[in-house]
Amino acid sequence: MDHFFWYCIVQCYIFDEGWVCPGFWCSSFRLYTFLPLHFYTSHFPYLRAMRIAVNTRLLLANRMEGIGRFTHEVAQRLVARRPADEFIFLFDRPFDDRYVYSPQVRPLVVPPPARHPLLWYLWFEAAVPYVLGRQRADVFLSMDGYCALRTTVPTVLVTHDIAHVHYPDQIPGLARQYYDYFVPRYLKKADQIVTVSEFCRQDIHQHYHLPLDKISVAGNAVAPAFRPFSVAEQALTRQCYSAGAPYFFYLGAVHPRKNLPRLIAAFDRFKTASGAAVKLLVGGRFAWQTGAVQAAYDAAAYRSDIHFLGYVPDEELPALVGAALALTYVSLFEGFGVPVLEALHAEVPVLTSDRSSLPEVAGPAALLVDPENVSAIAQGLHRLYLEPELRAQLVEKGRQQRAQFTWEKATDVVEAALIKVTAGG
Image (cartoon, rainbow, N blue to C red; front, side, top):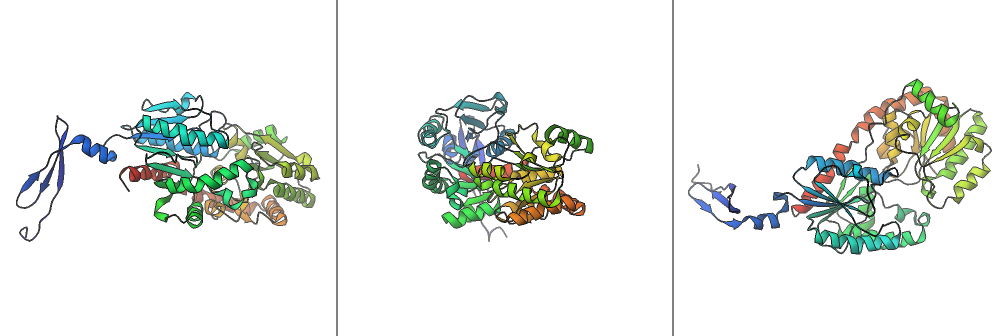
């Protein structure tokens, strides 16, 4: 039958002198063409070891928060998976050696420290493009939602949410102006976008009219330290943090979107109705616009049972989550909601919001409430305190729900995006 069909198979031979010979085979002849090896490697960088520049400015020792943790977990796995590639880590200040994961990582300190909108602009629009060009990067991976507009280097951008669109009044003025101007341009500029939930993917698509095939989902995951704690371990943690009393736990930065004034008011109602010897522990730094939180605390009849712990170091977090009566995370808006997943791994019941990404992350393993309804939040606290059967059901469902989210899966998605942009789509 081969006189009816012509077919060809591309075979590549790399000779010592650095030339590539693709041999085109068909049923009646073989044709060789010779092109320099650098032609293929310059036009198709995925055929050779890549030089991957990574924005690592949020890898902050002892001050790591959500986006920094995502960067750390994904970056270290990419480095381990791709031993032939060179990684250039771009820090904006002196770095901790623990984040230089292997000899194939070359860390660079690129000033100025980008911690203010003006400095964001200088770093991303002047310093970073210069370094990308000088280092001849093949691709730029930025996992904090910012990228460089003034570069021709293919870019993969990880965007964790577009909360500024939905709650602009809760963003400080200059930062809000920066986001309003630059975020749409960053999203348009990026060759591929990765985000952390299907909710965010659809949100970006609908608000900025970007094609869905440009946006992929890499959900967060948690550290192995988040696990079920024994009764004795829980008692020790409660003795340290709540004088031995059971407690509801909130984890996250303190700012308006986290909805702490309503949580405090709901806790006060729960205490008034139940008289339960339960405390509310708030773990997280004070960020911005915290006046309403202070006012709610001052107005609470049971404010002596509300304790602000401030920033909680990584090594203390798992025990605090694992000893809680429940995680209370009634945020108004989240791109993902990592504390919910941490609680599922610790086998702790969850009370969370019925909107944004939180139902997606929690699935059937949480009690969902309207975060704008103080009575609904208070009722949720009451149920989790009084109904051990409900707590047990939520924990059981959490064992299945949590399995959907792993750092290996997240790294798969980011790596696929890197390959796609360097392969020309």
